[in-house]
Image 1: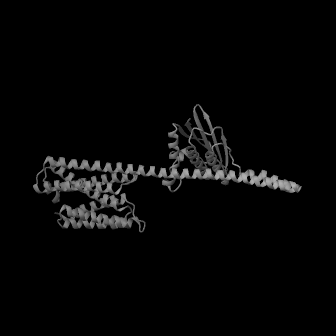
Image 2 (image 1 turned 120 degrees about the vertical axis):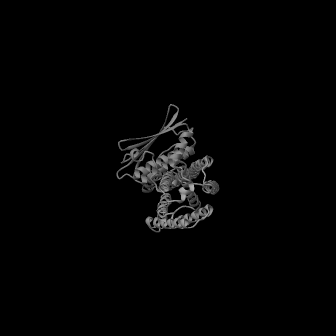
Image 3 (image 1 turned 90 degrees about the vertical axis):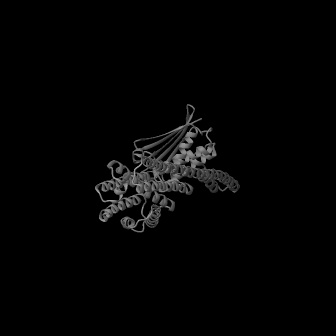
Length: 430
């Protein structure tokens, strides 16, 4: 065996493995990424050189390799323990699978014994190594691209079951390799077994993606439910505050009425004028901006009008229908989210802003139109209307809950922009 060539092979292999783990995981922020990658490469390369010098069983090599990768990942890279373990096993299995498949197939094509192809420094071995590492690079790049597209989210029992299946695949690979290596013969049955194991691992990987996506969706649904519960509590609190405001208004009017009677008895005209002015100008300010029969709906609209005014925006409301057939909580959540989005959009404007809310009925549908001033082309810059807030998990569910309510009432929702005004149009079936 030419140790110079083996060193080159180990160098290439170490570079590919290091590229895989550094591409899959982000490094910890303590030092620079280059330092961590350099140390990782040095450790993996040193391990490869050591394994070339000693003759260990596949099982011992597997244990040592996984242990080394786990040490590197836990020390230098972000991620949880189980994800580190899973990727360590996958990194080894890809290496073993590409090696065995490539060398077995090439030995059949070139008519060279498997043991000779593995051990002797020939052009055939160089070709096999080149193909193997290229395959490893391609497969690892595919896995990294999936990682960037999907967030890996697996429960402990799922990770355990998947890791166990992958380990069994590794054992099968080892058995097939030992049979081929020791007998120095090539059987089509072994090649079929090898390809079946390869197919099993491909299916297993897509199973990981499927389970991870399912868990992610379940988590998002749970977050949405919590957010909706928080919105429901907030709207109920608004209703309570609305009732308290009405009560305060009623009580203060009673106090002023008593004061007026006392003042009239004393013929104090200035006091009477002052109290009349106080009653008309001050007390009436406590009255809601919008007067409608449905208290919860009124509480939501009035709170948003008040918020807009405090921020310096103009908000106008035209309420021609109170959507009696829509549950107040659903109507409140829908309007609260849409008006919050309009206020948030106006908050980003540098000039004067205006919000308009219209509610009416037409042809068996309740119609809602909310428009607000914008200074950019919203649909061009953010066509999916993703939240601009930093914590997207907590703040990105508003429009989702709106869509759920629209679907619940067989409605539709549309967005459009004309000049400097952005429109949201919602229709809900009566």
